[in-house]
Length: 275
Image (cartoon, rainbow, N blue to C red; front, side):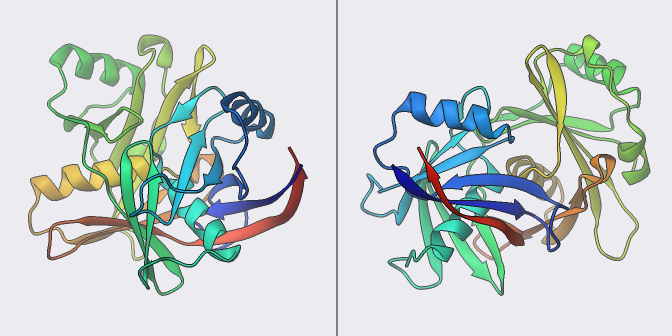
């Protein structure tokens, strides 16, 4: 069957500088195995499938697959899937706000100029990280941890803060000392176009990988940092420099206390596929 398809670069304003995403726009009728097999074949960090919503409050439903399994939520697939849905004729029930249904429930997405931003979902797990785990993290990344917390909004992140952006960029992790942990590292930057530097590491296939630009992690880090510093209302995170990328994630807390995670998208491929 011919299905509409798009591939986008998310959290970037220039091609091939962000995090790629494959989107099957016509995902209805595919089985779980069909989706898993195609996501494995694309070999991208995530592939999404757009479906009719089951919740009447939603505009569309998305299922998010990595090469090895399904995620209840992820940030760059949320922004990229919404952009693909809009580009392929999607019209939200409420002007200016798209409501996405996914594994964690309903996620609101709004336009900020040409940029899309989603409301960060609540953390599924928060709070302090055990001292033994922090010691293992320090051994794995080779630098001192200033602070750490669980920041799990679906993928299962632990967020750690280190001295500064230069320290983040210098890290060469040894994950033999730290198996099966999804780790986000943040450090403050002194720069005109970004405020913090972020890196994300996750396990898979017996090793660890670095993610180019990670919406879910940046959403969780923003909840953590803004919770610690109530006067912090907005900032820009840079991510991906260690991989030759130059992603930007825009974080903002509104008057209601919701944190919005925004990013640009660049469409690279559009067409049909047989699936």
